Image (cartoon, rainbow, N blue to C red; front, side, top):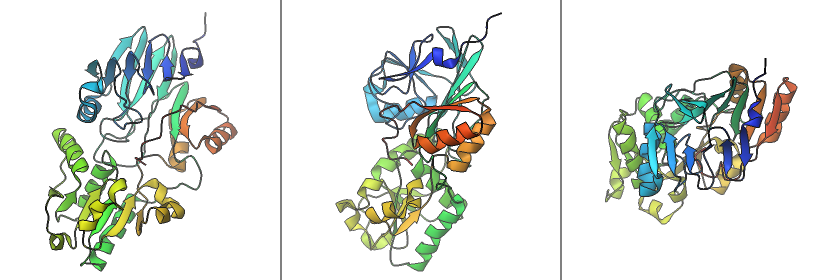
Length: 339
């Protein structure tokens, strides 16, 4: 009786990314690949010009919007929980809880199982399906916030700070820096859940992504494009824009904005100061330290691989808890500012 092959014999980090040998496909390749499985639509994971692309329907819609004809030579949608066989490898996608359509890749081959998480979070988010833990032999994780100092506060507390500021300064507006895919829609949902039903104004890049979310059944209330809106009409309102424009000429049209930013990195005061952020909001679409630890327990994997992020402390903690752990150091992941 032969034992199952260890995933390290068939799932390998190579210069182009993480490669499944028997299935002959890459997961989130960092350079062009003939066959690619894409975990989600952020640009550090979903790159242009791959050949055959497999992803959820939501991720493919995002890729078509962002990449046009360069989204892939052929695009195949796979729903959560559906199984496909690629070169003898059984592949299915399960929710990662990161953004709309985000998925973990579950691979079974000859009795062994590896799960590649992509990016993920464990917090409740009404704009995407929640993370689903799958027990496995090897769990491949991110480590964006892989330090014990990163323990995100409750989202509701951060939104309360935003709404309190709006009430405190009715002659100003609140300009919130949010990434256009995922963070913007989550912040919108949190604001609405807090009972704020006034119009919210959006930068054009965010409006376009919200339209994709709405196509998959999401609703955000009264959202309006920031086009030719009189300055005085913006007083007392929330405006969402990509982080890069909060200190740009674009923001000069606004009535004395309170500059906020929603990111896990707002836990680091120096980062907020460098960005000129008056109101840091610690809201992240990535797992914090405690959630990473909880996930390792939930998937019950004896071995952890770390793709990118702050891996040293995470690997040490995994080792202390009796697991094997290694850093893959995949170059090119974690480059998009979606935290």
